[in-house]
Each structure stands twice: as C-alpha cells, then as structure tokens.
Image (tube, rainbow, N blue to C red):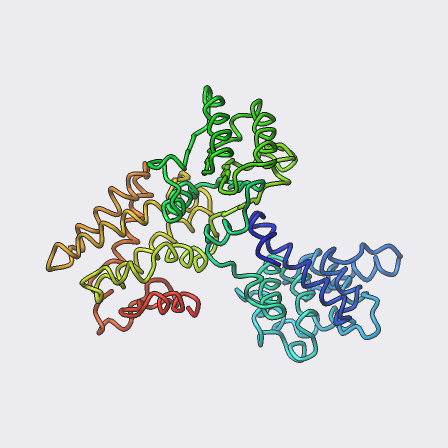
Length: 451
C-alpha cells in the first residue's frame, strides 16, 4: 500500500509521508507518549512563565562555549516535556558538567549513529528519544536520523525506494486512468514508454503508438489522436502539456469521453513540468485526480543514484560481452561516474557552474560505445574511452572548462587499468566502494546495497 502514493510525491515529501506513518503506528500501539511526538514535530514550547524564561536565559559560560541559544532553549524544552518519567530532566545540567563529552558528540559528522552519545545517555534513551535529542542539538541531522529510525522500525522499503519500473506502474493503469509523468532535469520518460510499447506491441510503425510534443498548432493533432486511439485501441503520449494552458480543459474533456466507453487497450500518457511555485496549479484538477502521478525525481544521494543508474542494465547486458572480465567492472565504473555527475547537481553552482542536462540516455550511449570498443579491440583503449565519454558524450553538454576538468578527472580515477587488475586491492571507486571485478547482475546490485 505504500509505493503507490509515494511514487507521485516529490523526494522532499516522501520522508514526511514515511514519518507520519511511523508516528501513527507508534501512537496507535502506545509505544511513545504523545508529548514526545509533539516535541519531535514542533521542537517544544516557548517559555512563558518568569521561572521558565530565567532558566532558559541563564546559560553558563561553559555551555555558551559550544552551544547556541536555540540549542539551549531546545534542551530546556526537552526537560519540560510532561511525561510520567522524563529522562531529559537532567539534560541542561549534564550539558554543563560533561562539557567535553557533549562537545565531541556535537561536533561529530554523524551523531545519529549508535554508540556515540556521552556517558549513560546511550543506554538511558530509547531509539525514539534519541531522535528528540538530535532534534534539539543537531537539527541538521534530523532527516538522516529519522530515515534510519523508519528503516529500523518499519523496514528499508519505506525509505529506500527501488528504481522506477514503468512496467509495474503500467499494470495499475486502465482506460480511464492516464499516467502523468512529472518532468525533472535529466529524466525523460519518453524512452521508457517507447521501450514498453515495443515490448507490448504498441509502436508508431504499426499505428498503435502516437507521440506528440505539444506546442502551438498541435491541439488538433492531439484531439484526433485521442479520439482515434480511444476508438480503435492504442497509446497516446502527449509531452509537455503544461505549455498548453488554454487547451488543457479540452484535454480534460477528451479524457472524460475516452474514459466513458473507450477501447480497453487505450492508454494516455502525459508529461508536464511541476509548477514554478508550490501554490500554483498548471494541470486541471480533474486530470490530477484521475491520473496516476509519477514523480521520478533524480535521487540526491550517491547510493540511490548509483542504484538507479545500474538498473538501466540487466544480466543480458553483461552476457552480451565476450570480455566479461573487463566489460563488467568497466560498465559498473561507468555507472558510478554517471551517479557522481548527477549527484553534483544538488550542490548548485558549487557542484557545476551550470545545470547540465545529463540523463539516462548519456549513460546508455556510453555503455554501447564501451561494449563496441571492447568487442573490436584486443587491448582496452582506456584513453580513447575516457576521451569519448568526457569530451563527446557527457562533454557535449558541458560549456565550462573547469566543469569539463572535473568530469575528466573523475574518468581518470575510475577508468584505468587498476580497475581490472586483481592485484590493485587498494583501489576504490568512491570511499567505501571497491570495484567488483566479476559477478552476475544481481551480485553487482547487492554490491551497491552493501557498500
């Protein structure tokens, strides 16, 4: 029941949904007090009485040396939580007494990891209460802490989303239920839709698939395609419908007509960019309510990016090579490079000076070039491959010299003879991820998950 609503949410909202779910479960089972849940959501109350204000304002020089006023207030709010047995009552005092231990914990890169809290607090607090402490003292790590808590409480599937599978999503569609793809940089659903159509016998060649890039003058073509496919059975893919604001009510009506008595094999695919502002609405409410919404947003963390990139291949991709000892690890390294290139975008202009439209097509073309090069040459053409990938395939998007230097440096580190040399035991593709020099497709996927 969880994947269907999650696939239509933006990445920033998926953890909110998982958090609300785990909190409702814990409250229903009476495993956490409501006051502690309220603190996690709101951060505690503002001091009102003179006594509370004096306690908050009285901050010793020792505590002031490593705590901010907001952290100090949050700790006092924790100490004032109204529960039968509040383990945080002594927290403000302990922050002043055990200064070095708390300072070391606060300055740690990942304080949410187990076994790092000072003195008796590690055993004194429950897993949920540790969230409250992180909420108070390290709010920058609360998202990571909640993700780990949800994973431990409900299971990894509520946090770690599997790569998008269009075939699985398509199985939930029907004649009256269109599929609406939300567009993001680097994500193009068109290739996936065409590939699925080819598997199921819906292609432009046999007249059962019609793709239209919406723009001025395309309204009549779209209406005719919808009417014909709804009558005869077939697929219609209308791209960038957000550009056709005045025509969208006509589209809504056409979909209503198709839903009422349309052919069982009729399917409508739509793509649109999200509105520029959260409060804006570019797609009519009727379409939003009837459609299956897919927000296949590019992941932000490296592991998820790598998992998504490598899922573009299959065991058949590995089996097609006559040189698996070199092809398999090089293909995996290429997926790592793609994940790194996508991951840098989350840092804005500190990642790349411009937002380059790297996409899955770049990786697939590079994989094809890699396969053909290894099949046609006796020796691995390391330099030629790095040039093709860094200067032509991915480099074709890049306009800044320093950005090109970054991607070329990645390729020099990832694609080199050590990658396929069993003696190069110290090589790492990224910290914590050694190369896997042989194995099945499933083994490579497991290698990503366990890294």
